[in-house]
Image 1 (cartoon, helix red, strand yellow):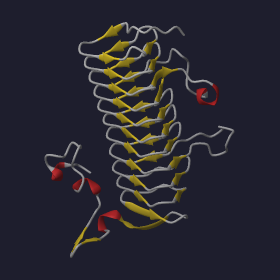
Image 2 (cartoon, one colour; image 1 turned 45 degrees about the vertical axis):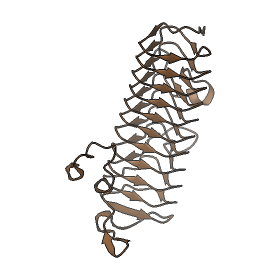
Image 3 (cartoon, one colour; image 1 turned 30 degrees about the vertical axis):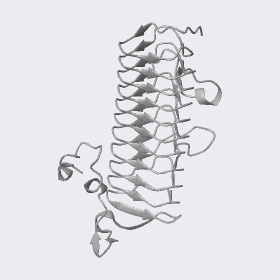
Image 4 (cartoon, one colour; image 1 turned 135 degrees about the vertical axis):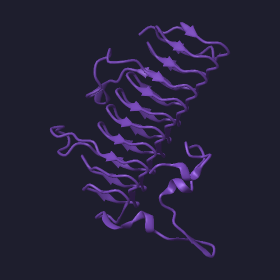
Length: 268
């Protein structure tokens, strides 16, 4: 791989540090900011208004264990949607598509072959393996592991230290099935989702759960044995002298979501 300090194609009003190194055929939109010591590999596409923090690596080709199942080098280019922020020392490999308005925190890794929708939020030190499919408005907090083949549907939240598994007989990879997390679902800290598990909409998984079976819409799951304890729509929460129902959560969290101008307009 040959790198140069000059971008082949850059739009207007870009701010690119002189220490940045580019591979061949890199295309950069307008008003992009790239901080020092960023490495951008061959064929990367960066949309308008992106911010790439220092020491980030874009479009790298995987090697060793991370290359398993990643596909060939010609499988596709790394494309970063407009208005996306890439944090310091983050790594985005080749053949990754990221939608617009993403926010990838420092030291996060997205492996080759992953597909990520609009307004994706990814915490520090989290990893998305190749072949994972993440829809729009998904939030991963810090140190989350999303396995190959996982499906995260729109508006779901994954709290810190959650692990999604896909190999029923590790490390054979004889039966690889990623879990599916439904729309608006919330997965609590330190929980583990077993291979092939299907979670419906608005499922609430408490902290430290080990989920081995499918869960229907609105189920609340708690305990190490993942007991179904209630319907999230009927959980009371006392705030001061009043009781409110915190779920479904979109009624209480409109900011930054499509229903922010009309909190009652969300369709869940």
